Length: 106
Length: 117
Image 1: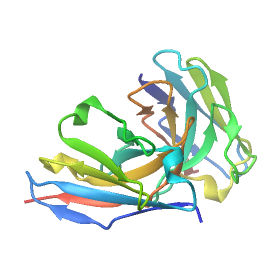
Image 2: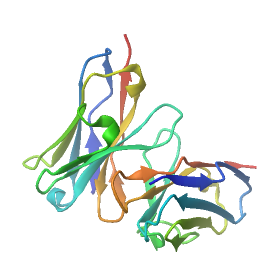
Image 3: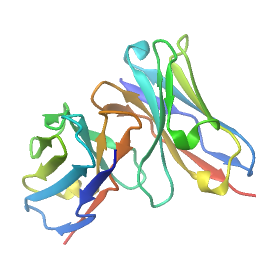
């Protein structure tokens, strides 16, 4: 299953609301997760089952969608949020990731 | 503290093998599985395969079939990933991750593997 994220690159300012989209090549129900990765660090789980916030993740992060189209929304960007974001499907093997969305400070 | 701690960086010559370890602590290791994910320099995340910590069942990405072996030692709560016949394009950071039903919720710190003659 191929996952396509858009955009691949996003420039935004602190306080902005941003949305990243992940489209699956076939239906994956709600078996979608979102991760944040900062340079030189391991990915960090943000959202699982498409819309469930991982414990300890700020509530400004939210996820939605099912089937083939999903979104990750950050309601008010904070300096710590500038990173690369990946979606991942766990509906079927092989598990796949999107190509990533790099979020940079405008 | 719930964590996965991986072995240190490796430098290997083409054709050699590498074995990376991933030690779990702070949770019940055999309740879940361990996935291995790699990231080449400047690139995205690539899933390599999964092993059940409960019974050792595996599922490998087709790309690595025949070249990778994943194992676990439940007595030490440690998972291992061995990759053989290394090539320069295997140069990457290799991560282990605890694989619950819906996500990879705990990640190791990563192990840098460099393949160079």
